[in-house]
Image (cartoon, rainbow, N blue to C red; front, side, top):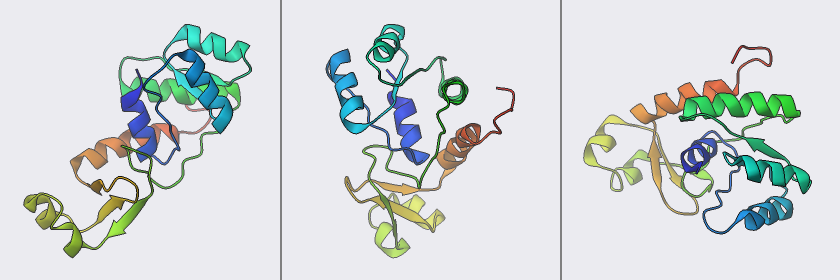
Length: 153
């Protein structure tokens, strides 16, 4: 239910696992085994996680901007510091490697190869990335994660 948010968090540099199949037990087991915080829009899962000793953040909002604001607010209240690393592949979470333009031009649409100079490729799944118009929208959302602790959300 939070797949879009998971992809964006990876792009922002957060090691994010997206649990697609299975029930609440599987989510909680994964969180325990990998030392993860559960982000969920499911109130009952958030409550169950807390009762089981798993840190969970209830993410509310009907769009990514509202969800990120709520995530920042809830993390702050729970004493969880959000620390992003380098951008990761939004599909799989793999490391992004810089690719020479000449190599990338054969793997991206011709118009993209002509307009852009900086390219990245996922070390795990091979997905190519560049800083196009979508990048500006992502960076707008990423700024919400870096707001001052006392900023009004």
